[in-house]
Image (cartoon, rainbow, N blue to C red; front, side, top):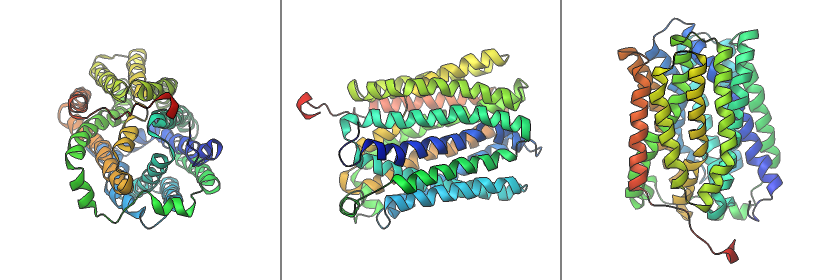
Length: 399
């Protein structure tokens, strides 16, 4: 699956294992952090704002992270990103002021931008187009495995030891990811210099790819909103409307993530053999349908069925937006292009909790999933009609 540039074992240690560990770290927070914030007796709007803080930090840092790849090697950016995530997450254990919590989540977002953009550029160089879907889908699957293990473990830890101690456990997983990156990422100097970034300004890169970035970016923006909404709506709806405790919410999300994991490799095969669109369009449709069904759930089991459907849909699109971005990125300005691409996608992730919080504040939690579903269907329409298929067919002799 991996090209000659990087051996499979080293690639797994450099990318797959740290991605799994960081996903587990973040997954620990999914059932815990929204309920932790509600313990401050604040409005849904404020909860949504703080939940969006990490995505906001990532959003404002994506483009600078892409530019940093011109001056610093990818390994340096990966390590710095994980260090920021580790420190800012662990510090939550000692902080009980909302403004400082917001600031720490912003810093974590900066770290995720550095880690994500440098990892994305590393993979775009190391994996060929006709194998990229499977490689990135495996990455997506491992991320989903982390969000299977993380919420279940987070629910148990939060229930048994208190919500705050979960933040320290998150940091331990991040430190383990840091160790893998330090030991396994190796980029020969001649490769680092010859690819990934150019002397073009961000404006030049955007101008050269304006139509593609506007259309594909708008589709990704809406699609990522419905994806991100799942992590906000499910815990809040389960806790506030159905009265579920943190452990039940963790198990509920964990089972959904298990379906995500099972779908990741089939999703990669679909992307590499049948086309990218046949994976990501049905994915976002199923996520939108699941959102529409959430308001009619009445207990744990009905919500679990809906969340499982959404897990299937999300898994079907495993790694699809990363794959699309890597496909579209120009060879000689890859870092800058991917910085812009991730900026747009993370914009959806950042806006989603804010929108959900505002909608929940104004018309209640019943209306928030409906708005998320509409946004998802808009994204499907744009990506379906406005973006070309990016899978390049190659003959068997060249595989």
